[in-house]
Image (tube, rainbow, N blue to C red; front, side, top):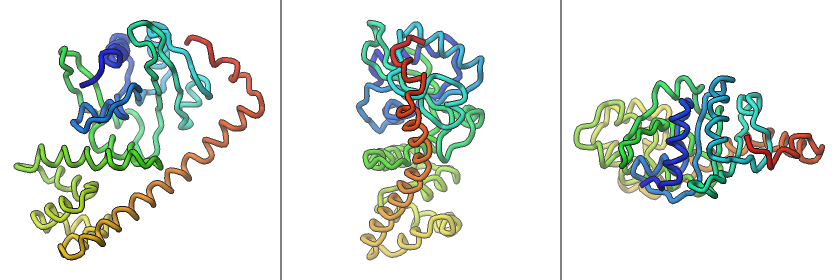
Length: 259
């Protein structure tokens, strides 16, 4: 269940017609893979008009930026995240992080086209990253994200395994993190498994139940390689932030400004 303060944040962004998609821990909650978080992570469209609408919502939330870089279109388009803390009494303490460009994900208009819209308990609608896009977004260098990917996939599999479409089966073969479920899907859909092998060679190990330990090791290797790609992606962005800090960039003085 999405906590009331975060629902307030989402309600305001919708009221201001901000083109945004919920991601992160709260999106995982919506997809049935619970993750406690007081943060709200949004993918947003970085156009001047949309950022202006977001600024209106931030004012209502009494949001203040808490870290570099500044709330600027150029920073978002370059791949940086912008971090805020909300101070309105209804949402006090809620952290709001926004991004526009993310490693491994398409441009925002494509994410928007594939979005999932869910109804919360109070009949409030919320737009989320599609599940495949959320899984890709979760493939980070942070160890805690990988068990969550596994839970997201497990929840999706058990919800849909009775009459799955080919697209869902292909998604499971590409992304499942649970060895036993990979074996189950591989045996149940051998033709689709054969097609998927070229892009995910570890599926060959699913043909032999005696190689389950090898499959587990291959999954760990797959995750470590993805974590390294994420580290490489973020390194120049982190270096840019360090340059700002050490150069006493004028933006440093904007930490306390309400947007």
